[in-house]
Image (cartoon, rainbow, N blue to C red; front, side, top):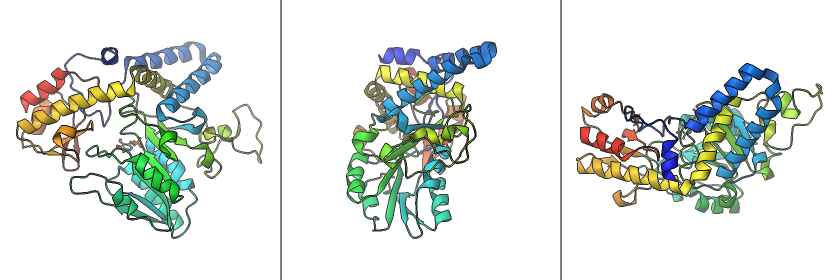
Length: 370
Ligand SMILES: Cc1ncc(COP(=O)(O)O)c(C=O)c1O
């Protein structure tokens, strides 16, 4: 299974992709899907109407399967930031309410909540992780007060891969009637996830990392039980019906997550995302996770053997993240560049993020040059 997955990526050995937690290459299936629709739009124009709508629906269903929710609960956006903004700006926060988040969150998650709190007179409570950047949920739970309305965190932190234990956290948020929102971009497709089973109220993410699809798609999944509470942030024809419906100033928004998609969609990007998600589903997330963690462990132990200090919330033998963040020496960056190996400068050091499509040779080349 993993061999078929690896074979779905462009492998020449010339470029080494180790910034997959930043922007990963797309699958051959995603590339072919874009070519397919580009060709049909070129030749058939409006005659494609029925078929492309069906293919967008297919992508929505596949993504919902990966998230663990119903497809009617999923809405597509242009980025994670716009999906988070939809929820944060429309969440019924009142003056004095509190929203809890981690202090090291990525801007596309942090700033929408910061802005929503500012506009409504609510308070954003940022919680520092421990010195090794681990994120035990007790630190969040300590900050809960009667005014806490939302806990909004990333599942996997973008700096080091520290995971928040969502199943345990949701037991607490449910009991205290707190809304649990999670940015899952750094984990979906890489680690098994189940929104409904885990009791998460809403999630958001994007296409260009562990879903191996083109940059330019964000998604929001909102549990149907909250659907009436969250109003559409952007509105247009598709909020109410389709482009063929007559204008009606009293029309009611749709009753599912489609009400959040105000207008026409990025068909090429969304259908390409569906093609990559289908590959992930047919390979199995557990299989992808196992291979990714094997490569990450090989990289981490190799770096440590060479004397690099790895900044990680995990013990060396229990490294359960794709992210390997290490402290570079003065030559590290130029050596990585000489190998055409990409990387990210993140938080305390250099972040390398192998994916399941990488080869052992990729890791060995990097270790030998460093
Ligand atoms: C935690 C997290 N959220 C979101 C994003 C992406 O946000 P957007 O799709 O708005 O660019 C990233 C990385 O790019 C990220 O690491």
